[in-house]
Image 1 (cartoon, rainbow, N blue to C red):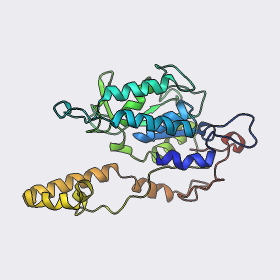
Image 2: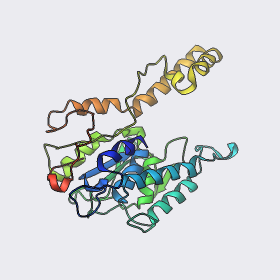
Image 3: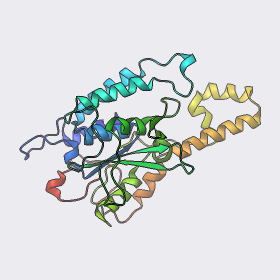
Image 4: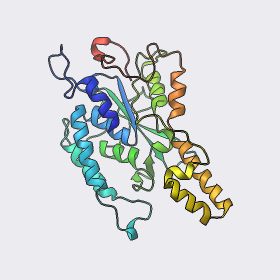
Amino acid sequence: MAEISILEPRVGPDGDQPHSQSPLKPCDYFDLICGTSTGGLIALLLNRLEYTAKEAIDEYFSLGKEIFNKKLPWYARGDATYDDKVFENCLRNIVKTSPLGGKDARLKDERRCRTFVVSTDLDRHCPGPIILRSYDIGSREPASTVTILQAGRATSAAPTFFKPILIGNHKYSDGGTVANNPSHHAIMEAGKIWELTDIDCITSLGTGPEGDHTLENATKKIMGRLGGWALQRILLRLWYLRLQLALYSVHAMTGTEHTHYTIKQKRWLTSFAGSTLRPRGLTCRHQAKSTFV
């Protein structure tokens, strides 16, 4: 919950604003909120379900305790470590008891700050990000027809942790395999929605910078120094190199630093001053009349 913990003191634990008539929530500060995987769940909690930062933190910790408290028996694991049915029941309760209510509520809702989460369609020949939107972009790209529960499962069905979710005839998995940092997709979506060339503010919340990742330490990061040393001596050199390449490729596919670096170099962000968030850096978007993402 590092992302919400960063955001909470900037908008207040209950979203209070000194000059507002009613408490403001994170969804009142932004024009567009998005996320991938666990960040996708956070985006749904804060935006589509309109939780305050504190409420979202409480719900998230409760969700984690319920889901990760017990693994599936070894003989039932197959392609998942945890029970997706428990996960879905937890999400269903969160949606049902949210400020908006309704366990079968649809993702689509254009009355509020726009939301999208990123997933992966495992049945596509060319894997790429699937954008599940709460809004229409003209008649070209309509809002997704999925429920909030389905969107939450689709964006966070991490391989080896949860089974993919079947929606229609397609299986969807965690969006982190194609867009672990969806900031670039947020910029593209904002451009299509408002036909913008300038964005006034981008707030990208992650879990901190990544360390150096090399082929040599690829296995050490997963198995620890001792485990990597032992594995290197058990496996033939060729097979060990293949394992290193596989783990290195996974990191390259799910890394976030390249996206962050690329966005920082863009000159069309009129007021993007870097990665540091300042307590007074956020103002109510309705007062500022600017585009906040």
